[in-house]
Length: 241
Image 1 (cartoon, helix red, strand yellow):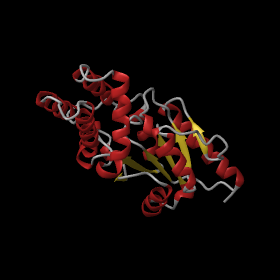
Image 2: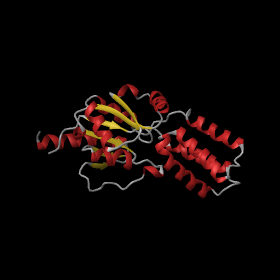
Image 3: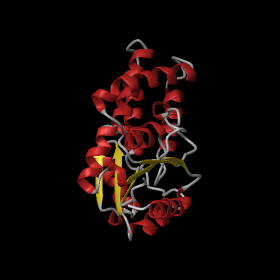
Image 4: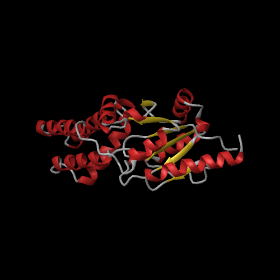
């Protein structure tokens, strides 16, 4: 039996608007600043390791990323990193926190098309102030019936949010670019998980696609989402309540 959809949730970064590209540009800046101390590949390995162990301390987002860059710079230079490098890393983080929002193709059209008939949510990780800034600048804020900025996306997180804002995970869909955070845990909670791949994916967000899961779908872009939702609705109607 397929329950009809009533709630559709979207991820934010690299689902509705560009984000990872700014991290990649800053990483290039980071390796250039420290080129006299280590090779770029080694620096990136050390930075990724720092990010992995610091997620529990700082959470996701630009601020934790900058702190991980500073920590890595101190480590690879044996505590001899010049003060100007630290200053430039802080400045790089400030630039990231001020970058303009650029919506991904079909983002507005997809949200607008579905908002009239479904409860639309935004569920995202990251720094509270930065995510609120990006949502405000995106021009999409008024389209969402609820916004949740969470420290981590787990099956329990989705179950709780979909119960609070909708009729439970069984009638909900999560749409995002991350298999690890947007798709797998939403399906584990009992909902639909729709993967919309982005050209750039952070290493820590990669995971195996749940290709055997009945409620897993993958789309080329958000432009195909309204048709998928309509198809699922027709299937639910055909099978009955």
